[in-house]
Image 1 (tube, rainbow, N blue to C red):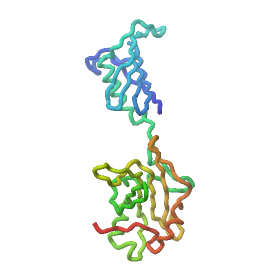
Image 2 (cartoon, rainbow, N blue to C red; image 1 turned 90 degrees about the vertical axis):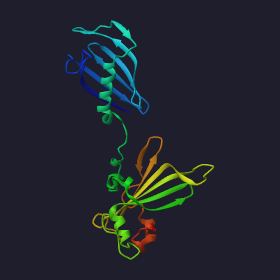
Image 3 (cartoon, rainbow, N blue to C red; image 1 turned 60 degrees about the vertical axis):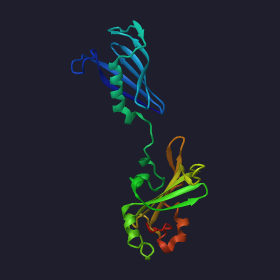
Image 4 (cartoon, rainbow, N blue to C red; image 1 turned 30 degrees about the vertical axis):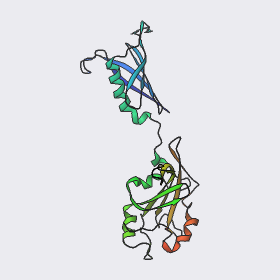
Length: 254
């Protein structure tokens, strides 16, 4: 959850903003995944609005409370929110949506102690597929950036040459599920984790020149968390593929 605070002008007339007499309004926004309660306070009163994910705004409580110099005097209670309030609340929610929503930016997730960050693989969702694999309960897809795909097409690593610096690969692990009784194949279900690797001979001075990372995914909170520390979580495992520049994945004919 996140709290946001903003200042805006409240129009006394509903005909248009340009014709309206400006009044200072305080807008307090509280957000959660299910609804967005909004408190609107003005010289004419205050309203509490629930703004639902589908985009509809609904007044749950409205109180007319004119302001005078001495403060707020409550005069009447109304359960009908004016079209003006709905319009303005929608506009402010749209404007403040990005700031008010407490949602993880996965590009900020990084393995501590000099490890890799997910931002180093930005755009991986649209990278070309290198290959797929499967383990009990898990389905994998391996993606490569353009540098990696070009290297594979040039015969690397089967020709004994190393991948060039800048080669990046991402392995997405999904929990698997049976697609249906009528079509009983295993299909991806929820995200399990993401593995990454990047080749940089200047940054990683070990024999393999690769940096590795793993980011586990929590479905309930929809957040990533790094596994371990440093860039070497996959170094020992990938020694078995030393003859292939420490890369297990082949580029099958397509």
